[in-house]
Length: 113
Image 1: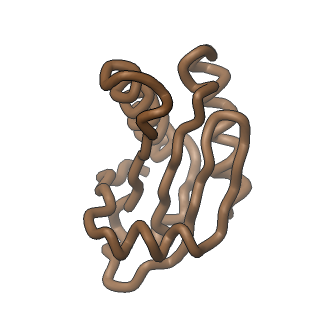
Image 2: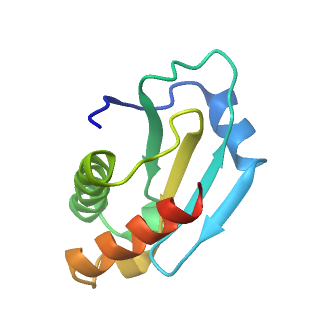
């Protein structure tokens, strides 16, 4: 199932999601929950990389990796579109292989069901 990925836009959306459910692993922390006034045909997800992780090049590399993984995830596994997601990256994302990160994230999104 191919769905368009849409980012969270308002500060209130981020604050509400931070108070909802949370899953964590060695690569990312995922906050997820229902937000009102949301389009259920699109995947509502945002990726956050903190300044502690490195310079802009490193942070953008992490975000590109996460976007790529989520594009694959929407095609290969079924993700609950009624939830909104906030993915916060951890420093271990930089030093590990893409396939390891991808498999771990697929498992986490399977657990959310």
